[in-house]
Length: 77
Image (cartoon, rainbow, N blue to C red):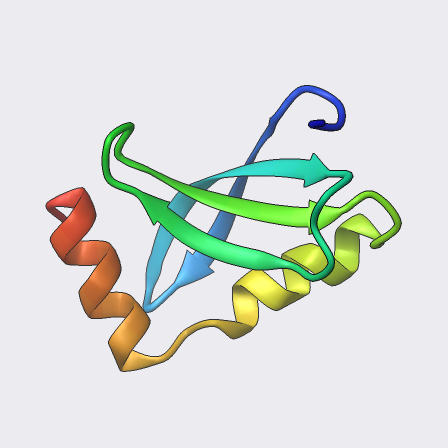
């Protein structure tokens, strides 16, 4: 079961401002950040009980070289 409607956010990542779709999930136990190549988007999923700021902070903390390469290859940046 999904939470409210997805929210569109932007996060700074490796010098770029990237659009992120933020969704809440009753099934999620922790925040996750993934690339949805079928829809060419980045999805941040968080549990219902997690504060929005905590989830966004998690996404912004994922700035490693590995994540940058994955994002660029899946989104054709």
